[in-house]
Image 1 (cartoon, rainbow, N blue to C red):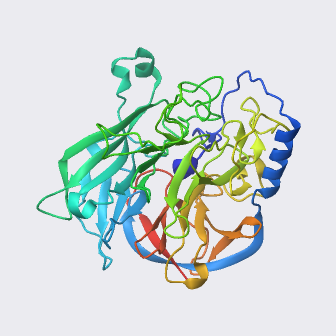
Image 2 (tube, helix red, strand yellow):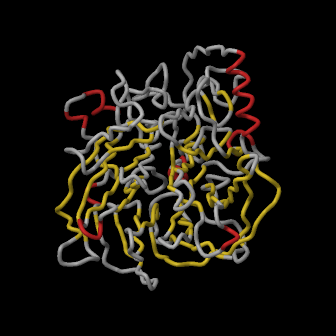
Image 3 (cartoon, one colour):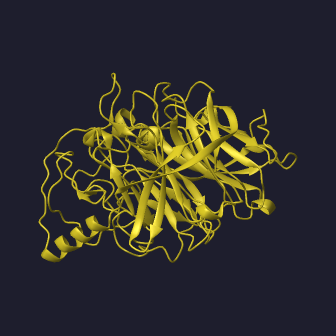
Length: 460
């Protein structure tokens, strides 16, 4: 996917009859020139952008769970060593502290989901977050794709749009800590979605107690087509929640409150939920457990580059004006203009070459965001482990990376896996437990089928 968004998140070109999640239709486009100051700023951004280094580190992958179908997240409640695994098909399963995968799902919402394609799909159960006070209030939140809601009142949506992405609140059963109350659902957000892809919908509570939600640009390719702003694209349309990071207060209103310190509160024509903009398909984000608790996102780009972004309040991350650190023209997505109106936009901290347009000297086709390591291996402290879904759509060839921050910015290294022969499986997502250890969530198929997928812990 354009990341699965990766896999779920990776739409690139036509592959064996599939839509290559990265190509798109062409439209008329007017490019704006930029001032000398903006040109200099752009040049500095490009210099600062990270290029893959030649050094490589080696890790082992230790299997911790198997028999899964498209695991897209693994989350532990605060102070709880159980690990809750979401499967794209609509199940949440519990991996106990001693490593047992319970047979009985914690939650089953398969009947609430839109129908999923077996070959490839980016819809489904996409996110899970536990309330900071879960131990006392039992509340948790899921993000999923359900049949279209807005089509009831909008004929165009009914005819053409794909589904509705939901964030919903649930509560744990009063009688069984390993079972959710399936009747407790409260809808928090509902966003109608034009295409099946670029859903985003990672969710998590920040250190400030607010709920953060990632949203893709609505799908297809080049941020253009049905359901996309034809002039700006959804990533730059501040009246739209698509292509954004959203920040809401689930305890402060019905269905939610707007935090007073959100950066665009009170601005005409701007949705007050928006925390950051200019994103294409933020596929898997995370807060650093240490340091300044920074928010990292792997944002799947179009055909030429992939990026990791550091998200801060009010920032514009460029899409669809920029692809990574490069100006982007959605009329000619593989030909990057020398200049564009990118003043005030924030460059990614890491960028690498996409195999769709820049093979063979490339690193992957769909970035998968990861986590900053804060576990027991002292030498790894502060390393941002992330990956790419695969270097090919047609065959699994996942890639692991290590991002490292130095005095001159971020660098990235390819991570070798010492205890595995042959290509890695598709890299769907990463996870982190309460001790700061990092895990890789993988699949051996491009679609949410099979029950053959595994989760591994990254170890020396």
